[in-house]
Each structure stands twice: as C-alpha cells, then as structure tokens.
Image (cartoon, rainbow, N blue to C red; front, side, top):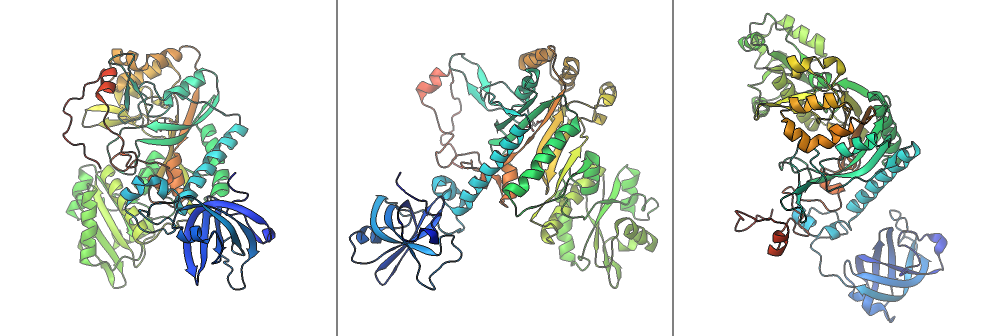
Length: 593
Ligand code: ASP
C-alpha cells in the first residue's frame, strides 16, 4: 500500500508515530517559508507541515492544487491556538520527513476545495473532478448506504436479488424503447428494458416468491423535467400477496432506512396516510401531494348554487365546479401581484382566477361585488379561512380546477416557505383509474402499465365504461414526488388478453410482443404484486439536492448527452455494415447539447 493510514483517521492518540499518507493537495499555503498543505483522501483531510531547509521541501513547495503526494512524517500536536475544531484531525499535524510527487495536475477547470457555482456543463465534462468535491462524495456515500440498507433489509426477509437481462424485448412503461441492433440477426433489435416488469413477473411464475433487484431502467422520453435516459430502481415483486402486504413491506423498509441513512430527516410516523387517487387530486390538486403543509383545496360549488356571479353560474350549469384555496397572510396583495397569479393560473389551463381578500377593512378582490356576506361566511366555515387570507377561486371543469389550484398550492409552498425541509412526508395513493384516454391517438392507455390488475368488481365495465375501471395500483409519494409505483398484477391469461385488446393492440401484435408472458400465465402463475421505488429521486430528497443528476455518478445532461465521453457518437462504416444499418438523413453536424 502507498499509505499506512488514511488522511481522516489520525488523532491525538497517534502523536509520535511515523506515518505514510497519500492523497491530493486540497489547499496549500506558505508562512515565512514554512509550507502547510491540507492533504485529502476519501476519508478526510490532515495538515502536513514542511520546514524550510529540509531535502523534500522543494517538491512540497512546487505542489499545487490536486497534485498527488505521498508523504512520510511524524504525527505531532498542533501548537496552542492552531487547533482546528472543525476538522476531525484538527488536533494534530504531520511533520514531513519525506515527500514524493506521485502525479502533478494541470490547472483545474474549477475548484475542488470550494463549493462555488460552476456551469453544469463544465462540471459534467470533468465529472471525475466534480466527483472529488465533498458534496458529491457525500452523495455517492449516501447512495451506497441506501442501497446497502435495502439489500440487507430485504435479504433478512427472504428476498433474493436476481439479475435480469438488459438485452430483451419491449417492456412498456409509457416511454419509447432504446433499441440495440443485432449483428447476428440482420434487421432484428433487442429493446433495453424500460423496467424489469415482465421479467420479475416471470420470476414469480418461476417460483422465486420474493425477488428484488437494484435495476437499471431505460426510457427514451421527451426531454422535459428532471429525467435521465437510464435510472435506477429498487425493483421488487412478491407472490401470494394482497396490496397491503406490499405496502407494509415497503413502509417497514423506508421507516427503518431513513433514520439510519439520513438521521437529519424527520419521518412522519407509521402508519402512513392512505389516500385514494380521487381524494388526493380533490384535496391537494395532485396525485403526488406534498403533505408537509395544509393549504387544501375546497369545493364551493354548493355555496354558489344560487350565485349571482355569471362566471360561477355558467360553470356550474356546464357541469363544472368552483374550487378555492385560502392563502394565509396574502390579503393585501397588490393588483399586480394578483394579475401575475391570474397569468399563472391561465398557464395551467384555467380560464381565469377570481379573488376574495379577507382584509381588516372588510372583503375585497375581483369577486367581492358578486359574493354575499352569507356566502363569505360559508366559505370561512368550510375552509377555516380567516382575516388576512386571500381566497383564490377557479371555476372550471373539475380537472382544470384541481390542476390549477394544485399548482398554485405549490407556488405558495415555495413563496411562503410552508414546507419544512427536514420532514419526509410519506403517504400512499391507492385506487388509481386503470386507463387514461389518449386524446391524440384516440385510444385508451394504461395509467400504470398493462400488467396491472383491474379491480375485479369493475370487470363488467370493460364493455360499458373503461374510464370508470379502477385498478389495484398504488404510488408511494413524498414531499410532492412520486417515489414508487406498483400494483397487484394480472396473473390470468384471459384478463391480460382483454387488457391488451382494450389498449388497441391487434392479436398478431399481442402474440409478437407478449406471447411469452401470456403463455407463462397458463402454467400455474401465482397471484403476485410488487413495486419499484426510484433510487435517484429518493437520494435526491435525502441529500436536499435540486435534481437527480447530483446523486448519479455519471449522469447525462438534459439533452441526454454524456458530456464527458461525448456520447452518443457516430459509429464507423464498418460497424454500421456489420449491424446491417444504413444511416439516412445524417445531419451535417450533430448538435452537441
Ligand atoms: N415496473 C413499474 C415501474 O417501473 C413498477 C412496478 O409496477 O413494480 O414503474
């Protein structure tokens, strides 16, 4: 080994010992000819001191940031007043006897020893340097602890980790597939799995009963939001379970894990709240509600049943609703501030926003002259609104009202600091609709994925009203994020076939894409269900990071490029030929970002 000790482990107890260390120059300074270096390795930082006139001093004096040194010296107590209580090794320093430069470093594109604001593209290009910084080192460590905890916890409960192939067939999760051309089978392609969904179900048919995998998933999605083309899930499946067996297993895991890996976080106690999908969207305007604060949505349609306000009347007549939130302490908002909120509401799809400000001088706002004192009392009654609050109404279809007020709720969360950052407010959202109407393609899509079990009592609605069919799907939500999705699965061929048909798949296509799983269901497939928490998002929340790229060692940028290795990149003509591929319409220059 190049070292006898790590830079982080030396303490007063080591005083007098001769040690050899190796690491990077974190910081360097000269005091009247004496050179001080903070030497860093993954385990910590220690101060080394070189006095002038000693043979090794030249190499030490030359050393610059991020040079790699090997240093031998004697551990001694720092002089009185020079201790650094912020450093675990702050009581001691190393009196250097010998120093060797193992490798110098070019001047850096950004500082490693400071958390300065660096352009993300530069950070991604030099990711190996970015990862040396404390923040990302901590994130890697956190991620390791999370995954290790999951593995140990599940192992103790009879789960086994099984690897499933990357080169497989389409496993739809609502995105496009990444395809890999086959060299040996001209014109044929593997698909990278969007998740191991079918494979884990086949493992249940195979008798594994309790499976998990730290699984990589590949989804070619439109470049929006905080997505990565490949990401990691704790993929899990259990046989002979009902919904709550899966939820209890996960709740147990997360309740034990969070204090162990992120003790600074506060967890809402078990049992977690269970909301139906409709309760969630009606009360919070979202199927992934942030439950760290109130600011609920209320339905005032009853209150305004006989309203003199035309806008409200017309909405109710056309089957819409009048919903509102009462924002605390914002009654004195200016005209301009209210206009900005209206613009925001319109961006969410609402026709407009009506306001009622409960000020000390009485009721004001755009809806004031249309709302009677009795109606104001009724609003206060249902919502607990009080003086100082600003009531925001959306009169629209239920969907638009929920969506708009849900977005306003989050806007005020951030503006008024309503959510405690140290809290992890976990909950379950259950009973999702089975299908969503795809207006563009004029067909039904699976709301979760096509392997989800519909509620058996809803099966007759297949012929009459698919929109009303509920499924045995569930989401784990936390602080406004969906952290996991799962469901009880279909294990019967007839039901699975029916779902594929309802999704508009032709019989030939079903056979081609899913013949294997339909056949497997005919050989004694046990009832089963599972879930898949996203590890990137979980780590992002635990590390208080603004996006998942910060908790992934080598992420792609938001244009799905790896800036460090410059991938994707072109293939040689020879490779293309072997793969039986001809590139048509090759752009003159591929955009880089
Ligand atoms: N395969 C699903 C997903 O990737 C998770 C599951 O249903 O277990 O979201």
